Image 1 (cartoon, rainbow, N blue to C red):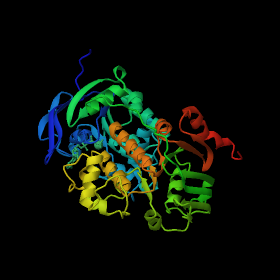
Image 2 (cartoon, protein in one colour; image 1 turned 135 degrees about the vertical axis):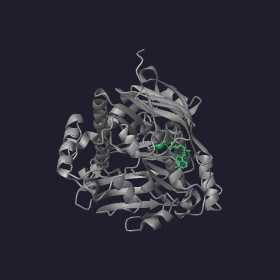
Image 3 (tube, helix red, strand yellow; image 1 turned 90 degrees about the horizontal axis):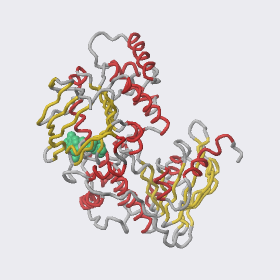
Image 4 (spheres, helix red, strand yellow; image 1 turned 90 degrees about the vertical axis):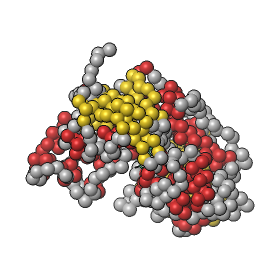
Length: 509
Ligand SMILES: Nc1ncnc2c1ncn2[C@@H]1O[C@H](COP(=O)(O)OP(=O)(O)OP(=O)(O)O)[C@@H](O)[C@H]1O
Ligand SMILES: [Mg+2]
């Protein structure tokens, strides 16, 4: 093999946060003209390791060399001076400023926005980005904001680019577009590191993979020489089965009955069009559909968070009594046992307070009395301990502020809190967003346990393969209409995929 000098060589890098050994004598080489996927479970130290390259943290031990020369990176500015730019899990843009203003923000010298806009357009043309330099950040979609972040680091001359879970917030189409840009940059000789939990992305995009486990470097290899199962085993440290159970529903009874539900957005666009279905207790109803086809509005209507134009949503008690949910406030609906856990793109903005510890975050949610998966709910402390134990949340303790946890662990706390509320109806959207494979399977298992205990689960997820394995029935939405409800067992991915787009050109069907 050709002996290239690494663009970045990390040697013996160790980083502690109090009692937590986040990185333990890590060796890692990063090369130009290559896309490296950095893999590992939630909390394995990926973000921490990359933060030492981008000047956010300083290593306790070890050295970093750029192109064979040892360097000291003490600040993001030092990192930029060495050509390193990082796109973080949580964006750091100023909302009220334009793209161009954000991109030049903090740079020395006189501010010449006109020249900056020109240079921004050049960068966009070179790699195939679309950014309007004059657009304000608050007017942008998540994907556009991410593009601004990338252009910002390129503007500062970065040729070593680190992206921390960039696709966690993107639709499949936006992901494809990002990957095309990243390939262009790689072919242009840049070094690219991408952190992702999605194995199909690793396989589609990366040239090489490097794996961390509990802060240690476990190994690296060309992507072509490995597969999802082997990578997962290396991340976890033992063989894991990537199967999802689908036990038969026990005694399913109608729990939520939706009839003729029609919802319009504030600007008058039809979001749900005459939607009717029943969700049963002890059953998982999966919702399939392309992004923006009405899943969000559907769950939010049931939870009382969405103004409804017409139709009815009934909660059906065990004895058959029906109660109309439309018109009730969200808290009353929650108290009836309907729990909504919607994991948004920005995980910290979703009902957890970063500066508060785990136990205090448990108290932010009112809990019904009654059965729960977590039996010991005498206090928020006990509840927090139960969630940490059952979901294997990686944290020094329950008095750790939530913002100190790794992204995936924050999410386990959030989902665990909803499940702990002992719901009779669990509305869950994007529950595994940002979770590592193993944790994702823990969540699928938890959802199955909810089903087994009689909860009516309505599951919205991005991964169609998972939906086909997990759901008892699949309701396919297309442009706000139900294009069909099919049994999960035996459903074909191709058929469901077609139903997801079927009404596209034929609105009368
Ligand atoms: N500022 C901090 N203070 C205390 N502990 C921290 C801090 N940052 C990270 N940690 C801890 O260090 C460990 C590694 O965290 P890191 O964020 O690097 O993991 P990760 O591999 O990026 O995980 P994820 O896939 O969930 O994003 C975790 O146990 C985390 O709780
Ligand atoms: Mg991380």
